[in-house]
Length: 405
Image (tube, rainbow, N blue to C red):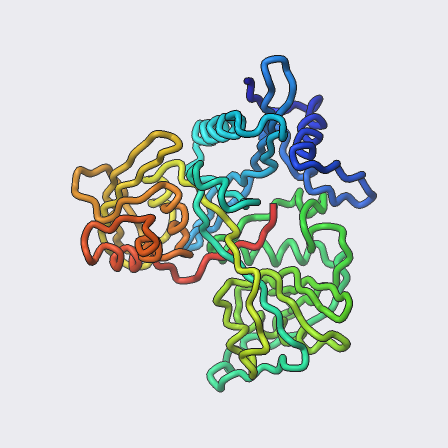
């Protein structure tokens, strides 16, 4: 079997093979763009071919940046468009593509990669671990009053400004600028390269799908948040609410919750523990559903990954990390001082033993190491090890990703 990058001449073969793997057909191009695969970078797309040259599998990566704890931006190849023809599944095609792709990423100097998993059972065996989670919050319109405590008054004052309703087609530059400021400050967020917005390749509000956008402007008239939404059959659905300021989020939430002629408001992508539900006068008016994993992280270089992110307390931890898929093993001493980490090989006894996928899960601070100890994934070698790891990997802001790719 041959695995190689696509060319301009056979990119259509890549697209046709990918769709055939999922039993569907490519969309017909329309004016204004919007084809999700148009954002793919041809030199980052792989084709798997049989000995006689028949295409049987695909995989690709996007060029993203990932925001780590401490607001550090790092390159993060986003794995996507992975598929194998039904006639060639369970014959080693996917394993071969994953090995080839990981080797290429390492050769290019990458120390991690990310993906969204269509099925939760596929990518753990390749070393990916779920690192962020998302949920849907549905609020009954007639019970949606907010009852903010007095302490919130100052926060509301900080959000002094205005909300303006625009059509999606009228505010492309605003969306791009506000999202970029947001993703640089939000751990777990991915960049949205300009070409995605220009090609309108993705889900709303990137795509050409008609949407209204509530744009929040601060007291000086500068856009500092937005909510993309649509209404249908009495339900107002918010695709995403983008801001790093809790008071601005509350102002945008209040705006959509006061929309007339709707019976419920659905916030599609919110962190599972978002405070909005606690701001409702009737706590039971907001129902959390659809909680699921979102961004999966694969560590390719343990010391490089651990020294790249920011840390929020000092300490030492010896990690014994197994990488079964690549047949590798690291035992390293992680030492954190003043927000920076050093990570070196060591012969000291480990505090924790874990799989590379579990390191991916705890890396952004979205999953506590003690949770995986209790689940039987991580082995703690002394009573205080899990508590120490929890404190060390803790972050100042929970990671969240809502970009779809």
